[in-house]
Image (cartoon, rainbow, N blue to C red; front, top):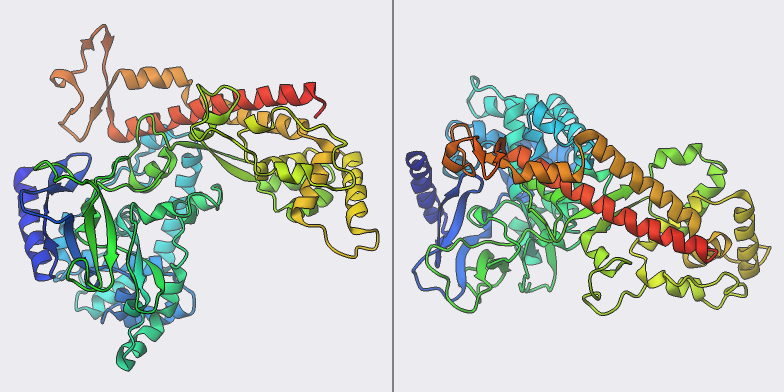
Length: 575
């Protein structure tokens, strides 16, 4: 392993130097079997700036569209909306991997060839995820990728290779899958100065006309987890909008005072591994005042004192649960403080419930959500929280809606449990509406008529409709439906892979085999009885799956307990 890593590393370091990358207080070296290469502190003096990479080296949609081989073939497809900016970068990686004389070879040789995310699981390993959100999401995503490969990628890559003078190389689905995984595990959302994306001289402005859409497509810098096909249908679209910045606290300033967020790969920076306690952040220097290199990205130490020599320098990928970490990056964190449970009411089931048309209208008027993420941290504010909430309060922001001074407000008694209810009001609003009876729908109509008049002089606001719905039916119907959903979630998990205790026992006795012939966590490289029990060898992928699904079972159990207690109180209080 040492020979092969050294053979890759030296050409890469030379490539970085040629491309004006500066390693000022760090070095890149092999970390371990699970992490691959990483960035480590060096003995060299540093003012806190550890690594500087010119933005011209980044693989972005703009670079791909300007590429002399790929750009002409893809520009029309991109402008007509046939492909998006992510497709461009994944296509670029696929082609460059296959090109015999690629100028990117030193960089590409350093990248991993296999991954820990579920797209790379064997059939047996994937079965460990059965019953979880990721099981179905992985099946859907792999099928989507296969379809995309067959419909667009395969022939396009062959055509590009022929144009490059290579009629012998063959492209495979694994090449495309590799490029897809490289993008999703390493891409950053880069805050670029407007003047960099859209230079002011006329020649460069003409070049940038074709890439305008690219910058706009990536301008929202939403979390990647909500944009992936496999999870997009089942994740709350409001989750962690700012987490994708991956630890960046950019202080860049643009001469035009505007920042554009563009996804891309930044060679060098992308070798930083993740840690909950980041040792560094990355920022963009638009003017060169900080690094001396205008339009560069740099790695900045967050520690006031100098690093211990040879210490790995990590960044944070954001506050992500194990579901997102495993799906995107191929690893999990045991006892992850940012873990969450996703609950949803199937949209297709709306059509089969009584009074579905009326309820669908009410759902739309209230802007209700049929799915929600339940972060573990919510439990700190619930009925069974250990100690007091960290922030000292847990005010429900929707309480105002319930006690607003409508003519009919106050007929339903305010619940005593309101400030202990951990479930998002947007989701409870949806469940409340779905569980309504015919007489309650009629009552909502009457209450709203008092507000806006029988002639419909104005449309009621979503807050007014929510207040009327709660006044008409209270919480018990919604909480019963929530209990049913959580119970079904827990049952599905347990029937598929056993109980939470079963998973805990498996992890206690686990012996992780990093790769064939290596048993990193096994004592004496054996599976014999140790401390009274037999160790079970398992791959890191299997171990990660068990850690993830155990966390899901734990959260389902704890949130079910919260929902059952809230339901009991609601029934007791007549809500």
